[in-house]
Image (tube, rainbow, N blue to C red):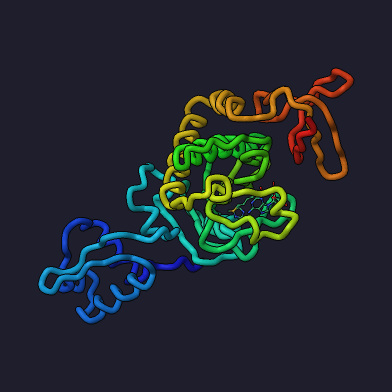
Length: 330
Ligand code: BT5
């Protein structure tokens, strides 16, 4: 599979970022990248057009003053505080689905922690063939390749882990702590602000890899959505009235994911359950769970040790639910 190489614009940007605060001469940049001074000057023009503020002083060189909030690998890598999640980032301006791309890369051996991000998706996916609205330039669409040594039956635990990490990342970056709804929703005032789509490739008893897809609605205008989605969705901007920078949020997302994934690998699923229950709004609520053609109602009690939802049916019987969509009844 073809993976895009960094362009000269990206290479120059990386150099400017490494030398933040000081001037780097055009000659030096040219030597480094085997480009003429005129070519360097042309690429600086491209970067300025993309929104970078670059100071240029004759005989001194170029200096980066500010960066736009773009989901490029250079922007995300700069200042990213992780050991492996996001160490390899493939960034697209528009793609079908970051999950589909990540899956292809993982099949070709992409290492754990490889990330795909996009400014927009043409075919953003939800669960069960549903659509994820993915307007360009306003939200986060990210997919992460993980290779945990677990059985396929435990893979849904990674979805719950991701919900915890995403909620904590949103809290850190925006000061709003979303509620978690089983299995894969993050809500603010009962409206969906983020969703998770976990896909896996496995043998009968061992996971080969997991693609963890996370969509977070950040600066999206709710009125731009189809009416049926606008009814159930929100964005951070819709809640706060403020435009939020996406790059620091996605960096925090990768940091939280790595933190909780490390905890999961070292201590198992127990600590994730504890944190999940702290963040979830469900315990004690009367809910309806639908899966394919079946619907059940009852009181949500919490998580079972493996991540299944425990539901007390009106008959008093306690049932384990492993998949489905939850509606809060009261
Ligand atoms: C999800 O599915 O919530 C999983 C969403 C995962 C999206 C990420 S983005 C990066 C990666 N690449 C992908 O292609 N996907 C992942 P589900 O629980 O089935 O919810 C889907 C439902 O959420 C839809 O039927 C709509 O009602 C609603 N919805 C659609 N777009 C939305 C949006 N942008 N914000 C909030 N709700 C939305």
